[in-house]
Length: 531
Image (cartoon, rainbow, N blue to C red):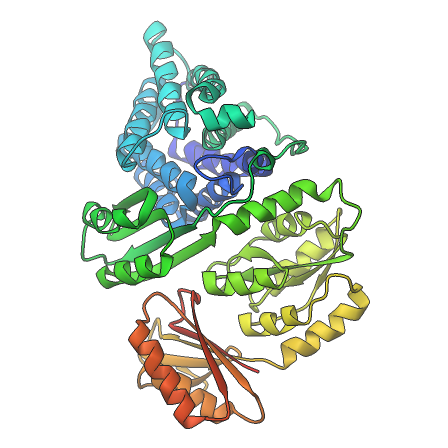
């Protein structure tokens, strides 16, 4: 094959997403730099899944549309340090090809070179022995091959590039002492090569391989430490440029990446002050998405997975739940629940649910979908599960899921847990406050785009007024004999707003105990539970 059409390129990237998925857990097991939190493979795969979603709706007869889907999809879906760097590699790659009708081996070489340049430019302090090195030396291998034989096919060029990349990947251990200490190669570089190998596999008609068995987790060689919080944000309609925002946030921590395109600014940083960082960033645009992960908890979680095979005290039942919002994630984790990232507007796939269930040590796993749009995927996962027995508790809100999780006792059987957890879910009312995305008539209410709306257990019961009005009025209209209200706020809510809301709820319903937590889902200014 001497050139790639846009349709072929799109098909290659879709297949490469599946190829990376096969090696996701293996890539996670390599992850020790910059922090041994074991999520590089997951983050890169989520980034590629976002690319695939954009490709599914793109006009693949046009290289410009395919290029935009790859670049735009990877930016919006970029997760973690590795995912953001991957998005910039793909952005550089598409800058070269977007105006072409077909891609030759020579043009592919230039695109790989531009990808590496863009990757280095995105990182404030580039470190050799990482995905950056592997991307650069892969491109150098492609250049050497095309210089030696300008008639190379695209397939032959990719083979040469990947061969050079594998040599580079093996050498990362000699460039980064932490990799040599752990006896592994760089996980980001490995993920990058899996993407390229997936592209080549599609061109050569190679079937997806079986997922490799994980025999060693590199994280086992590192003691539990305080690693801080991996914090990400995505701003829409940003009022400052990516470089300006990078300057504003650089004092908050390290592993800093801030990139932008088409009015969006994406940021990633490791910090000890995630709340302060997100509050500051939210002043300069609409917070579309944020994510905070406690990297120490992630490290502990992957160590528990690593040690599961040798333990004899594995609990009979585990729970996985679909959750968004770092505050909610933290509460669920404290209750012994394994997290599937996602929720409203970010529904996980059947495979995502299966992967999470398979990561739990227990043979019986209860799934909390926490969204009506996820229940069907969870039920399909239960049908397809082979290594575990999955049981779906059809929770429709994050509040119901919390009620269920509070009743979870890992030493109990599924037969005991399902009715107890269902009863726990039934005791909780969930209120969500957001803004209408369009003008519409819903349940007899005339809703205007941008207007504040309030939902109780997914049913629209309030519109108009302020977000704080919505919370107070919905609670007043729903209170019977409950005792506790918990308010989760997102990054757009200031401490002063939250304090004012607590005062108003206390005045209106003095019999309630009120608690406020940061880290609610980005979609909702307030997510409130009443129990």
